Amino acid sequence: MAVTSPRTVLKSDEQPATAARPRRVTGSLTGRDVADVVGALVSALCLAVLLFGRLAPLSGGFGFVVVAYALFLVAYALLASIDRPRNAVKDKVATVVMFSLAVVLFVALVLVIVYVVARGVPAARHLNFYTQDLSQAGPLDPLTIGGAAHAMLGTVWMLGIALVITVPLGLSCAVYLSQVGGPGSRVLRTIVEAMTALPSIVAGLFIYAMWVLILGFGYSGLGAGLALAVDMLPIIIRAADVVLRVVPGNLKEASEALGAPRWRTVWHVVLPTARSGLMTAVILGAARGIGETSPVLLTAGYTQYLNANPLRGPMVSLPLLAFHLVNSSQGGYIDRGFAAAALLLVLVLVMFAVARVLGGRGPGHVTRGQARRLARRSAHDVLRFTSPTRFTPTRNVPVDDLLSFGGPTPPEGNS
Image (tube, rainbow, N blue to C red):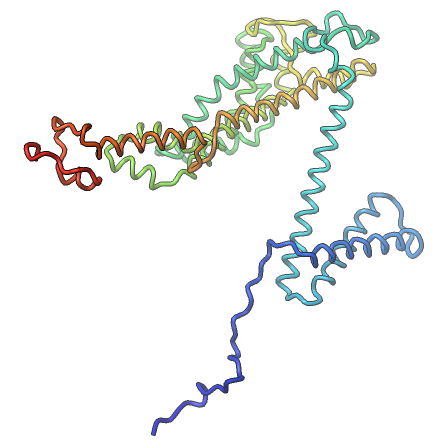
């Protein structure tokens, strides 16, 4: 007679003690979550009003916001813990904190942009702002006289010189660090990371001492471009190094397995795969250099006249012009300074848009045009191996290889 263990005997209406727990979804937003947020917000505002008006000797707008936010988090945690486990409550509270911080940062960014644009519209709406310099505009002259054409041209010259220097050097250095390596790569990476936190005024002083004082070239747009290149180079190298390290290793291994040398693998596989990321790295470096003022002031000086020669004579950039004009006590100069700052924002936005277009999509994503070209090329390859009229017996192709593509059996004389 078989003996059954009492542990394995379960009645029909009993359930095992270790039943599968329901899977918890942290990224969903339900009506219950919205109700908890609204209820916690209303209760926190009411308690904050009571504390600041009657119960406690508190005052001040900033203190009211901080206390109300703290009460909101406590109230939301209490509401969320009514029928949820502890881990779910932690997830909900952390989500609310991250979302609220993101909202604060977004609102602050929008306020800054709106304020700058609103203050700069009175001067930026006039055509002379883009076609004239400040040589004929005095402190009391109307906004219809003078503009920022000299600063626009100076910014283009300085940033262009810096990009011509930093893009080939930065990408080459990033390829060396991520793809080649060597005994000096560790030292070079340490230097690049240390230069990333280098103050911009140090780069300006270095170029000022070498270019202006020792070599005696004087103030020029070329000197300012060199100073900006010193600031931009470590940013581009570090960002490009990170992007190149993300390229899948199986792509490089497949290229080298087919017999391609290292330089061809880097040129035809690694760089095209990381093209969008490399464009982002260049734009990050350009954004660092385009907003600098102290290196430009030390190496290019300041002028109110239009100077189209970057090799000789002082030049000015949009950030430096905005800094000088906003510090003025005249309303016309202040409006022109905010207009220059708004123009700088637009210029950075255009740069990001151009980088988005040139960088294309990320790895594995193709556009509609690329998809059509790939389909056309695939159809051509299929016809090449399957059409009897396109069979070329002059090529030394094994018959088994042709049959593996599903093509017709070649004539007997070609076997």
